[in-house]
Image 1 (cartoon, rainbow, N blue to C red):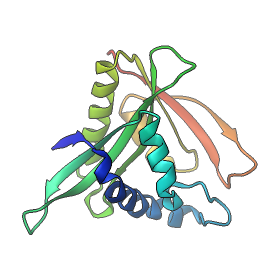
Image 2 (image 1 turned 45 degrees about the vertical axis):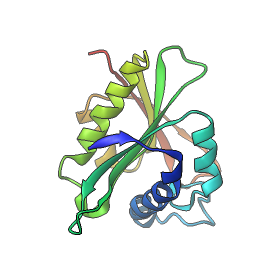
Image 3 (image 1 turned 120 degrees about the vertical axis):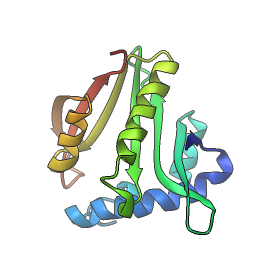
Image 4 (image 1 turned 60 degrees about the vertical axis):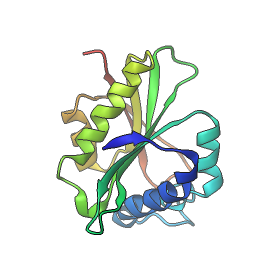
Amino acid sequence: MIRRINKEELPMCLDFIHLCFSTVAQKFGLTRENCPGHNTFMPMEKLENFWNMGFMMYGFFEQNRNGENELAGYFSISKVPEKEDTWMLHNLCVRPQLRKQGYGRQLLDCAKEKTREQGGKTLFLDFIDEYTELKEWYFKNGFEFKGTTKYEHLPFTVGFAECNVTK
């Protein structure tokens, strides 16, 4: 079940984001020293700021062996202020042991639906361009490549893609 996150669940979401993105940090050798802004190292204040800025946060909850609901996936979306009808996808992630089972696709479909519900026509995202497998997954799921940028402060190239959610 995918549902909207409430503010009291932010600490749980932050732990989940850290867990999920730690595999990316490990894969690309990202550390607090060479990439302090990576999601693996996100402080609670940043997630709270996103909440206060109106980011719409969603969790994919499943029952664990003990019958308790726990996060299997997470994402947030926010309106892009300078672009009419455009929303941005943030922090789409799936619990590492549940990857490649369709959870990501369900989360992405939900993000597209929530963007449409808010009057959005385009969903935009950025990613580590060198993460070929993830980039190709987004392309297979309706996103079109829009270019790259190399920032001096990041040890990777940032890729950009967008999807028309009205189709």
